[in-house]
Amino acid sequence: MLKIYNTLAREKQAFRPIHPEKVGIYVCGMTVYDYCHLGHARVMVVFDMVAKWLRTSGYEVNYVRNVTDIDDKIIRRAIENGESISDLTSRFIAAMHEDAEKLGVDAPDHEPRATQYVGQMISMIGTLVDKGLAYAPGNGDVYYSVHDFAGYGKLSGKSLEDLRAGERVEVDPFKRDPLDFVLWKAAKTGEPSWDSPWGPGRPGWHIECSAMSEQLLGEHFDIHGGGQDLQFPHHENEIAQSEGAHGHTFVNYWMHNGFVRVDDEKMSKSLGNFFTVREVLEKFDAEVVRFFILRAHYRSPLNYSDQHLQDAKSSLTRLYTALDGINAENIAIDWEEPHAKRFRQAMDDDFNTPEAISVLFDLANEVNKSHSANGAGLLKSLGSVLGLLQRDPRAFLQGGNDIDSSRIEALIRQRMDARKSKNFAESDRIRDELLQSGIILEDGPQGTTWRRA
Picture 1 (cartoon, rainbow, N blue to C red):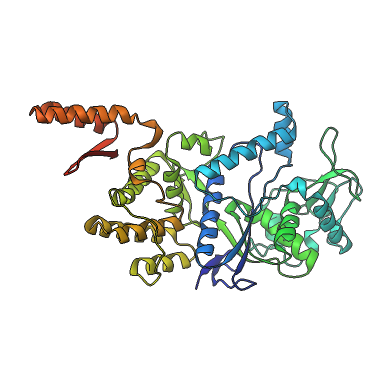
Picture 2: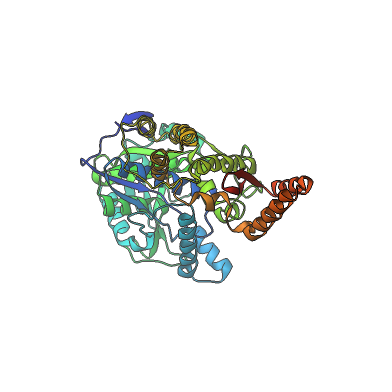
């Protein structure tokens, strides 16, 4: 049985969906005012992996990942750029889709945009006001009263007193409590706005996910995911809003992936170690990046460095090398086969992808010895569950667009001519030249092949 580490319970729990054979998942997506960075890549890849495993396990999955397309940062960036908000957000949504596709991330079943659900947000805010959990102080804003929700702090594990002591909260004279958060913001001159019972304005960030998840998954669903940085206050506030409005449990399992660090430091623009997905993909193959993300457990910190990506590249090369030269196709997986059984046990243990990948290496070692088409087919099929190993092995091993394959082939022919002439010094020189460029030659009965180091 699948077990999931539930942040709310602080332990692994057996997964029991609300409706047998069906799973509803909501994941907090991107605020689209810039290109996706490594943290976004991790969220996309991790929950793509989760959805793939649930589907492999026989569940019908309804996967929702939202887009925040109205926000203070979006408004500021549009003004700085001198473009409309819709032009800005459309451009970066398209860029996000390009990045996701390169990383092998399937499109979610639903990708709601905040601006499409403002009416539902207004309705939920009205319900909270009617229940005494929210208040309008008369300035056009509406705030959530955290003091009046008994369960506030249960996701972060902090009491209101702890939060008041430990959080730096902007002073707002209209708030009853510094921890109260905004549900509706009064419109400022020149900003986009919608009509509401409290005057023209726009929704706060937290309310959008409560409203959109309710519309697409219902008031109560199975899994809510996102980055660890969203646990507080965003997800804590979602619980307060949704459970406050409906009076019952909002989500059964809360999943949070770990932070991304760069050379053991927190990734941030101020430290100059901030990387977009596009910058990383200029240096490394997209499947290598996906493999790098998945070979760490999703709850662990992920430490990015060029060396770690080079290591991931070498490791993925080993797997593709096992498939090279074998005419293998994906096969139906027999989950009682020893490798498949171990793979399943790993994935059922809170999506333990590092252990699942170690099974792939054990299987690759056997394929290297046996050259079994069936073993290679199983390797491809298990890899496909993680979104890996679906390319032509030779194409991967020969390195992609950054290598001039015609130049390499010409050097190989020169080397063959040198060997026929017994000019072994020239033959060795060509091999060394290619090796310095990251190309490994392999001589065999069928001739010389090459791959990336």
